Length: 441
Image (cartoon, rainbow, N blue to C red; front, side):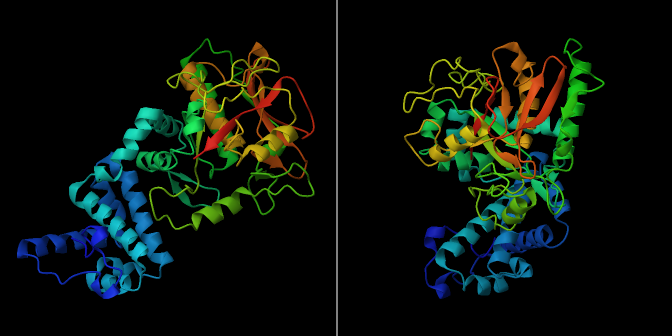
């Protein structure tokens, strides 16, 4: 057992009373020594060997807990070697505040349980998982999207490779459930409006790689579904400036813009976002940032039916239909406004609880690419098929070409039988172009 293996409520605020003298039986001491040896290997030596000794479905959980412990130690000046030496760990822990001590105790206990029992402690997440399953059907959605990401080659051994050459593990089911549970009060209105559709986005990956992945996905879908009307010679049109748009010291594409002007956009490059989030200590399963990943909730194809497949379309101008939800009814976001107007709507609504669009954000090209693959897989139909008269092209207001200046858009071009990634000037209005909004969790 680890030196902190007891209820955190028993931990005194007085550092000298943190851990009582060990008076365990010989059998317990042997068990503790073996656990210490396993931890030593898992933290310092061959972590992959220890991970591979666990059932495959728990590999991501192992990596997440291990990273949380190592990052906690680094953030609090605890040498990694001390984590496997009870006396050294006790000395280091005596300098921690009570909340930090409790957090470290919880992390070590959860890791010990996983190593010894070869499964996570279910009680850590039971309530959160039950909540997420009841309201979001989370496990089915999560498993389905993870399987798709693996099939198309995005997810490898539970992680992606970022443009900074760092690997980013996919958020676990338990982490997502914990976030949804933690934010259950603030998300109540959004759930009532139909925001129940999960979207897992590997934001940290190269946009070029994601574009090529979607291109290969389209060709395979055509092979498996011969009736799918695709131009196999040119399945994906992109404006030339998309190539390498998120790479280099001065990338052309920025994210989370506050304005669509060349003089000041207020956005950040992908590298800046990754650098900031990668340094965040991953201390708890409910941290609000998943480095390298973005977790969204969107409305499914039928917002009144949380089990409906795919994502809700953008209705053409004047065809929005019935507002969704009875707590704060949300009118469907119609096409016909300019990117500037959609961005302004997001900004004035963000922290306004009375707005039907509160807490919502614009999408990025990375978001749209993953959503398109999920939508086509689930429904057999392309997303944002503007030529059919019931859907619209989507402005991707979560990103901005600052040097142009222009706003990305995406659609299925039925006439040319291909996906299109283009751009438009921020002030332009078109009755066939709208925007998807999502809730980032």
